[in-house]
Image (cartoon, rainbow, N blue to C red; front, top):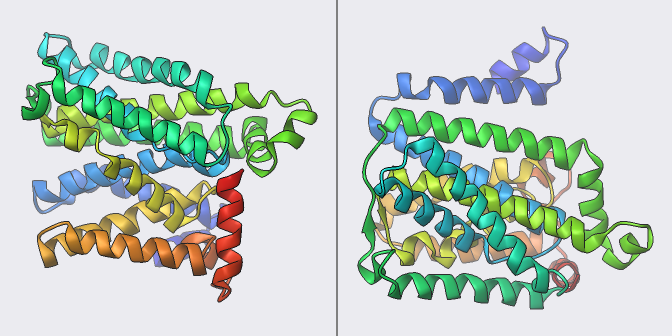
Length: 331
């Protein structure tokens, strides 16, 4: 922060953009200054979670559709790319189907589900994700319940830079679409009142479909990168509901419906996760803390951490915040 403040006093650039440049430069040089490969792996995973949280934020935060299907698109992308790699495909050609297949599936699933509202859409996407996971557990092509190994084709530094490059491309595109183009305004209008948005001439179903397909494609790409990085896939991990749960909590913790929210919430939650893993060496403590964080954010910090930096004090009116959350879900 001192570096950002010092540069902002000497350059005609806002502190926000200086912070972005500092963080990007820090991410680029991380593999060269990290004391071990362990820190590079942590950086790779954190970058992935930031991108995934932003993909859910597009559909859940900006559009107002609570989707639990992102884990399915993530896992499908992982399995598609892994299967193609195992059949001799090169890295770059195998990554394209990891983007296209989840996007096509999102289009098919979106046709009947995007006309649903509130909890009905959430249940429909959850059912789709659970169907995909159960199917992966029984079919032979995915290795079934024993999982499948993926051939190692990249070293840690290479996959780190590929993950970083993909994340920067996605975040740049997301900022352009959501913050500087009419597309983001249409999404917000649908989130706030989809009937009024339709009366204003916005093709609500079409716009929802565009956001849903794009978020699924992004989840598929990072799922594909995850598969070749982790080198082992199992339906209970690659298609777990815990994946989308973390996306949701990261977004809510940082500030749902804001571009900066996932960029703040993902590192905070990821750090908490790793610290608790060191302390407890299991997932029990992590799940307890996650549940407590959700309660705190919903009841006292509906604008997330970014709301605090924006000068919005935590409110002590939990019933009012709970009512706002119910109205958000009902929309």
